Length: 105
Image (tube, rainbow, N blue to C red; front, side, top):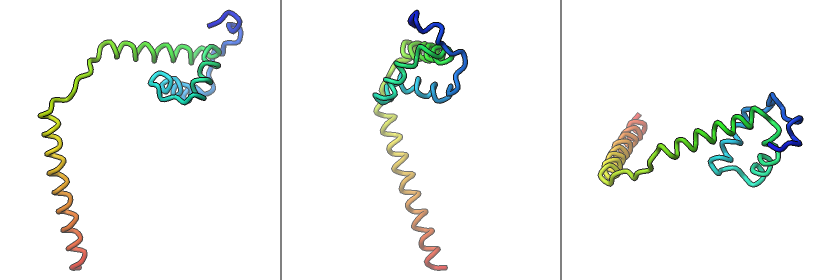
């Protein structure tokens, strides 16, 4: 926070929910250029948003250090695909049976 803005810092945020959504978008990289620019221009003026940003960034950083990205085993992927294929066939048969029943009645 710059020295010139200390007296301008708000201690209450009127749009805290929206601000937190924007902070999350900034941190996960889904914010638009306009949102990023707005964030950069307004970040130092709202204490609850500054604290929210610091908290969210700390959580994200801690999780990225603790979590290890691993690929799902091929056998698991194959098993899921087989089960989905089987479930799709069962659903298709059920729909056909319903259509036959509707046609008969």
